[in-house]
Image (cartoon, rainbow, N blue to C red; front, side, top):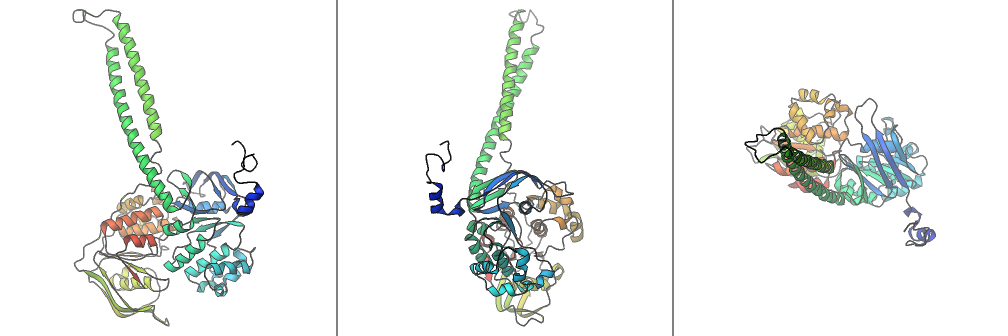
Length: 539
């Protein structure tokens, strides 16, 4: 068919009017076209994005997937027009971005007041409609912003974000720091929306709410219909095919190299026999034999050239086959063996912060046994991180950095004597200076830490940078890597996966299942919980 379906004689969709009548105008989606987009931050030698091109429709629910530091948040900022760039971005509509910026002064204001700064074109009734859809009480709009929990802040911002239907929305990691209940509400809300890009490393969220993915591979960019799991299944098949093709090409190149070497040596030897001969020993050879030998040599040299051309073609076809493969480099952990079966025991435990009106919880009972991985689960503010703090105060107070008030304990909380603990905190704000400075200060083996970071996809150029300039995902990787190289009896990790990319999460899961260290974790990633937890304790 050489004409457009709408205007040619053949109309599988009917006339334009009939199509719009059946499907509504919103089905005719505009496109966002990105062509040869190149960008690097001022003063940096690194090119964040280079010659990036793709087209997406504004009616899609698009998941943006890629390793930490690949430029996902940078792309969103470029779409917003925050930085100058090379190349072109063509879009027929406005963009808006989550999360909105909230300064220290804004903390005292209500969301209703901040609405004027965030989205001045919308009216309060439009936001109230979305507040109802995201299962919130409207009174949250009229409380000082600082009094809202992480989950309430996220839901209020999303309600404001979706209040205007004439924008394409850029949503950057909405579930970080959210508990399981809040994640479910956000997931349900976003699954009923469209017209957005979602940057997330939460596989459960990506599967539930996206219908297309935009993937920043190692060397290429691809757009594909489906969610994370369907893309990952296709990627595994594609990678397996690429590896098989690579092996086939390597074998063929090996054969051709041997043929070139064999034929070259024959031609060289034959060419050397043209000049001079002993008439007694070579009585059957005459002067005109020289021309015959030369012709044979030329023929063999032509064959060598043909082999070499075929070899060049094979090498060319092989190049790039493995460029996008996510190499699953196995991480290692060095757990210490402990002589007791029970490392931590709580019986009728109650925790309360000094001057707080009530306890966080009471009557809690649990044990952390050797080789077990206990995951603490519950809503934000229920006391999960406080349990970790109480254990560290008893067994390893030097590891505590963050100040959160004095804990008062009732009941029993016993930690085995001589327990060595490795700790990953939620807080990354103390990371500054180079990795070398960090290792020197903390007493880590620098070469070992850098090796683990390389396995977690850190580029060597990151090793000389100030850690204060790292992305949040890169900072969390530094803390996880430092914990992995620390021999310990017990690994206590407080939300270790916030901001860490999907591929690294899968590496860490594989590591834990292989080495089975004793762990006490707070982590809201459902897929991670399902794979690594030997027990989940709901607070």
